[in-house]
Length: 263
Image (cartoon, rainbow, N blue to C red):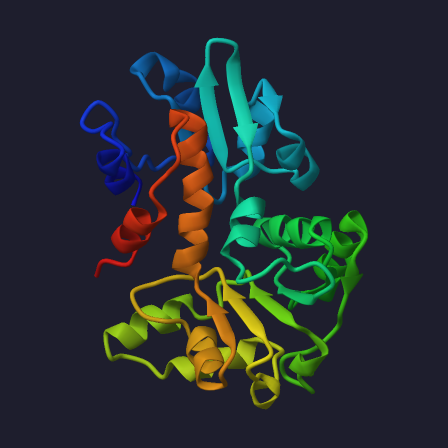
């Protein structure tokens, strides 16, 4: 996706984007060595987002407020940290979420970024997690609401919300297995507290999970007529501002989208 954008911007082959796999214990030393190797910056994913913020010399207000960074830039003055997860979510939505009732599924780093972004954009935010204590802790930290629901018991009534954002890993394995013809993907929905029958076309459903096939939640939301934003669209919207930070140019979203969706 990023390499396709760099080519469209006329920056290839001088600029390239590559994957670097790191164990947590190697993160600091490897990242500190990258500027000397000609790197302009990096995107950082789980489990390194907290370490990225800690390592940076400076951080944006957004990254500090969320408590994690997914983008580092190497400058003459040191390492600068940014978090594009939050604006990426907002940019991917079909309309501004101000006044919407939003339900976040999960309580990890992505959930924190999404909850913060939606709260800042004026949404009324509630957080659910399989471990209720984690949802309560995150909700308290962000001054939003925690909801308690056991997936094995009565599900949440989706009609209570306008926007549902899945930040859990539920559906990833099922979606990939379904693409291989090896599983019944709908079964994974049992791990989420959503009443499928209460989803309908008034809802906007965002699933941060992406794989080689639509996730069960995305499939269900389409079937129920909801407006759907899948994980690949969010990925494009998160990657674009990172590229803008590094190059100073406006990223070609259509090119990035097409590249991200290639089989």
